[in-house]
Amino acid sequence: MLGAFPQELTRICEVLRENPKGMAVRDIADAIGMNRNTVSRYLDMLRVAGQVEMKTYGKAKVFYISQRMPISAMIDCAADMVFVVDPSLTVVEVNDTVCTFLGGDRDEILGCPMRNSSLGAFDHPLIVGRIKDAMEGNGSTDELRYMRVDGEVFFRVKTIPTVLNSGLPGVAVVMEDITGKKVAEEALRESELKFRTLVEDISDAIWIIGDDWTFSYVSPRTEDILGHLPERMEGQPLFSYVPEFDCTEVGAAIAACREGPRRGSVVSLSMQHADGHMVNVEVSASPRYDLLGDFTGYRAVCRDVSERRVQEKRLLQWKSFLFSIVQNIPAKVLVTNVEDHSLMFVNHSFEEMFGVSSEDVAGRHCTEIFTQDLCRMLLCGDEDILQSGVEVDIPEVVVDVPGIGERILWIKKIPIFSGKGHLHYILGIYRDVTDTVRNEQRIRAERDQAQQSLDSASNLIAVVAPDGTIRTMNRRGSEMLGYPADGLIGRNWFDTVVPPHAREVLRQRFFAVLENSSFPAVSENGHLLCSDGRLIAVAWQNAILPGEDGAPAGVVTSAQPLPDIF
Image (tube, rainbow, N blue to C red):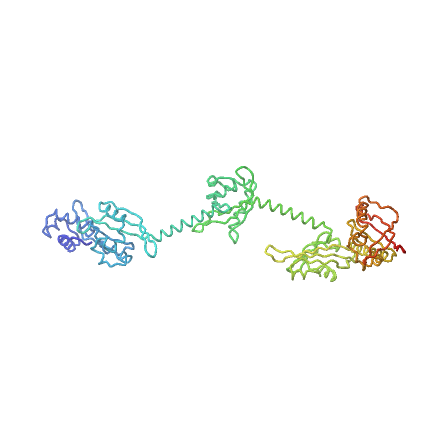
């Protein structure tokens, strides 16, 4: 250390160096020609400065030159920043670490007041106050934040009282850079906060279970699921919340997570709620190990699946209901897998018509079971669905079914997509419309025959609907009135063929008759209006046309021309 250094101190050090085995106070005083009290005081100063050591042999005190490293050399070996100031806060020692940090030169710092040197950056009221306290013998340790252009730097500042070579009090200031530790602590706090927030906000409960099956950590979400306070569950065994008859099975299922290649398992179980009812939960467990690789317990994520179980049960019931409907509808149902074109399912009606069951067709191709003609019919429309992805209707397909004969089928093909929009299956619905088609053909033939009979009649025959429109008119009627065939269909009878002077009277009479459902069974004479405006004298007869429900469906009128009226 620098400062006032009496020549006597130097002389004492030189005498001790010449006598490495040590000297007593009297020997030193005789060697330098000084009284023993003064030599004792100087030896105390040298001891405080660390330059002299003393050993006691009985009542004798022997002094040696110090074998320790000088303070000035020692502080340069320190990784921390170290500087020493005297009572006037003048810098008397500074190590290289301080010079590097401040970017200053040692010679520019030594001998200068702290405030006027590069150390002025540390002329902080806290540091100055602690230095003054240390001058009075009160050391301290504080943490200080230092702002730089490239960011924040944190120091742990220690002030250590010391004595200078001059005998004056001094203070050694040690500044340990703890920036890395602070950053790590802040990162740890943020990580812990994120983890805690995550654990508290997610809908699942987080548990840590020891190797003795007791809870060592229970997240707050557990209370929402089981109704128990987390702090009351901690320290309690898992199996105190599980029905006794399930404990062995649950323990084995969780323990199995240690054996699996993925080191984890999902276990479904029931746990008792605080109010006594059972809660269906799903626990995802994984083993925990310490740094030495020893097993310490389990880490578990628990979620309430009670509602999901209810939904699954409802879905199962709904699927069962739909399956029952599909199995019992009269239409034939066939489901085909798009990926490999194999058959997946047929219903009872399909089985009855084609003589194969779902077990017979599952996973097999159509050509392995049916004839080529049947396969062509069963798979018709599939290519259209593969290309367009929309439903396909095929109204009438004639097919020869073995054991039944010729049948007419109406076919509908429906694409079935996955949740991601990929085509997975094709649902085929085959409805036997043989009887319907044949009845329609018969009715059409009868209608055509009836129309031919009407057209061959020599009189006008028409059917007038309840609203007064002409629904049917035979060929003879169109010719009599000067209209092309079917030219009168859909027109109003009264506005078209009834003369204007009788139009409203006959219209009211027509609706009254429909309301009473009766016509006089007599022939009446009158006139009809032709397309060219002429009037034709006719004798007509009317009759009510009953509907399927018994109510009038219209009026049938027959008109015979009367010659020589005009």
